[in-house]
Image 1 (cartoon, rainbow, N blue to C red):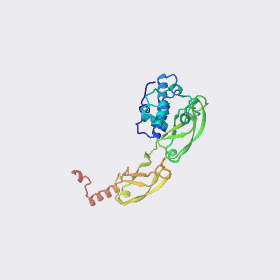
Image 2 (tube, rainbow, N blue to C red):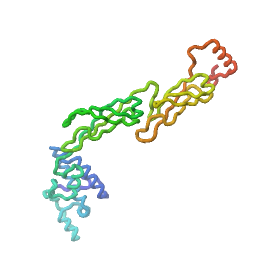
Image 3 (cartoon, rainbow, N blue to C red):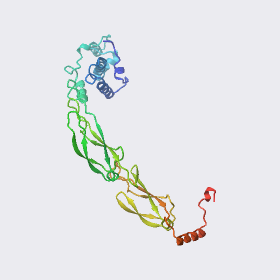
Image 4 (cartoon, one colour):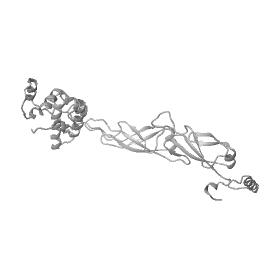
Length: 310
């Protein structure tokens, strides 16, 4: 067999640690293992080269011999022990056991970790995940709810209906994981997961941005001018809001912790922001008109002065 650069084969520098060499081997062995690439001769040869490289570099004493001579054979190992310079000899690959019957424990251990059941067993593969949309109302997303889910029929398992818990705080596109409810695995591998992708309905007057809620509440001219305490809606009911004297239309007020529960930070909530909008009565009596004319005379301020217009 032609001489190969074991470090290059594993894609690591000559200064790589034993752990780095092991990680590189595991990554490449997963990619080129014959069970993963059935019938692919190129992958099989690549796997053999990777295994040969790790057999040497993964053993501290063999690696020392390789670093000294650029190759590793038993003759070179003996030469290293005796202090002789050694001679270039080809690697005897025919005695190398890839099946695990005569290979070192390091190969078997790593294969057991990667593939389960040892290198000679069938390659186990986890089943694919499934994503399924589920619709919830704005209020259900706020409070959390339970839904009945019909799991699609997949090979090796009949369809079923289960009850799933949707946690408080989900948003559009949130994923709720149901472990082991996806496609079955291959050769005894674990089943995949089922992910419920939430679609949250809209609300007549609330808007959500992240964990915060926004709404617009109308107020009267006297409430804006003189100040008032008014009731405002929240998803959980009503709340009191103080309107200070001289409030302008479009001004925003915050109700702390009246927003959505934070999905990834249990115990915390967003806020609710209330924008007030000053509205006039649809019908104005003559008496009211006269009061407004008097108000105009007493308060001749021009609100458009900053714009340079009358």
